[in-house]
Amino acid sequence: MLKKKQKKYLKKLTELVRDPNLNNINRSKTVALITMEIHNRDVIERLIKRDCNDPQSFTWLSQLRFNFDVHDGQYGECKVQQTNCTLPYSYEYQGNNGRLVVTPLTDRCILTLLTAMYLNRGGNPLGPAGTGKTETVKDLAKNVGQYCVVSNCSDGMDYKSVGRIFSGLCQSGCWGCFDEFNRIKIEVISVVAMQVLSILDAQRTRQDEFLFMGSMIPCSTNTGIFITMNPGYAGRTELPDNLKALMRPVAMMAPDLNLIAEVMLAAEGFVEARTLAKKTITLYSLMQQQLSKQDHYDYGLRNLKAVLSMAGSLKRQDVNRTEELILLKALKDMNLPKFIKEDLALFMLLLNDLFPGLELPMENCNNLKAAVERDMLRSGLQNHKKLVENILQLHNSQLTRHCNMLVGSTMSGKSVAWKTLAAAKIAMLNEDHDVEGCDVSTYILNPKCVTLSELYGEYDLQTFEWEDGILSTIFKKCSESEKKDEKWIIFDGPIDAMWIESMNSVMDDNKILTLINGDRIPLTDSMALVFEVEDLSVASPGEFA
Image (tube, rainbow, N blue to C red; front, top):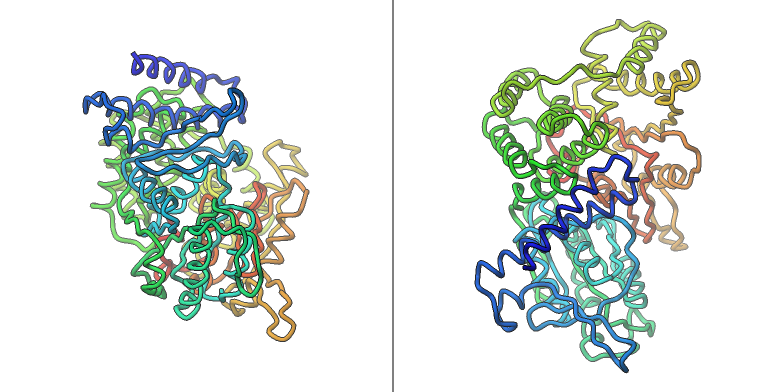
């Protein structure tokens, strides 16, 4: 009975999300609802399959449950329960910011992290880049109504800068997720371990106040400390044993891409979500096996998510187009620009095998293409077909990604591509008065010609005052600007793990630059990052995923 009711409810939601008149806010709500209700449907099916008819059955107890205990017949308290753990619901307003697809891996991770919280311990999801470690911690925080502060760690952090974040978390009762924690120097991590121990001891003994870094501060029992890390990457340290004892590890290796693709497509209103998800994952596995091994190729979760998000936006733009054509267009647009000439023909053959007989109609980018060609003529450049194609690909990629990398050797037209696109957009606004045109402000810097402290900022060791770096100053200026123009920050220089990994939280879904002094600068919708690089041979998988 409940299963039928759930399927009926899901059907109503999918019909609602296909409504072309639905505004963006309500569509985001509906997509988040579908994502969670599909998980609820799977849970009901699992309970039926295992013949679960006892409230003490582990299949039931292992689910995340919300119970409302009524006091005095009127007021009550909401509690979150899983297995034998109980945590108070924190009622923190989360906003309309989407939900994570729940896979068996996510379920196991949440079970471990919630148990760790109940036992006054921290959590430590670990695994390769792009497996959903940080996103799982954030989604668990949404589940229990907690505000989660994500901080990107770097080797410039000392025990004082980490301690200030801990102090704020303890006093406010927030959760802290420390991304790439093992990038911090080993001598700093040893001191941080003692800070974590003092916090967890104060929570366990239910102290209202405790001594932390020489000051008495309030201690909230709701505070959670989580660290995520990629073990085995270059420049990473091994956690000391005193910190390992305080953190419950969760190995997150291979997410269920098939399930994630299916749920994301279903949430975007695709009727044939299961079939299309299978085709997409088959294509990605064939690409991984048959295409050449280039440094900038990636077939992981982040790339897949970008393709599926674009498919959703294409479906909203043209509800009458067939779903296979929509997915084919998303797969081509998001993958074609990065393939070298030899792999391009093979990729097209793979697409023809999986989507036989389908032909995409010609793109309608005539206005932009004409503006690009006019600007090239004005600049005295040859109207080369391949260069125009690359410029249009950069434009299409910027519509769905906030970070784009132009990869190629010197004199291959990387700078010309973004300069021509920016000039064409300005010309469309000023000369053609086209609605697609806009003002573009560019900020160019070479991150390798300055030190890390000059790039991100540092403390003056004499006065202990914070001095912003070049990048943090540009970021603040762009983020605080109320102008409607597009702001492109151009990184013209080679990429290496020393400087770029401090930008991991900017380049992923968090879109926040976190500095050593605790500043958190958001990447706004009008901002975009463009990297000009020769190759990605020394970049970690987190950068180009």
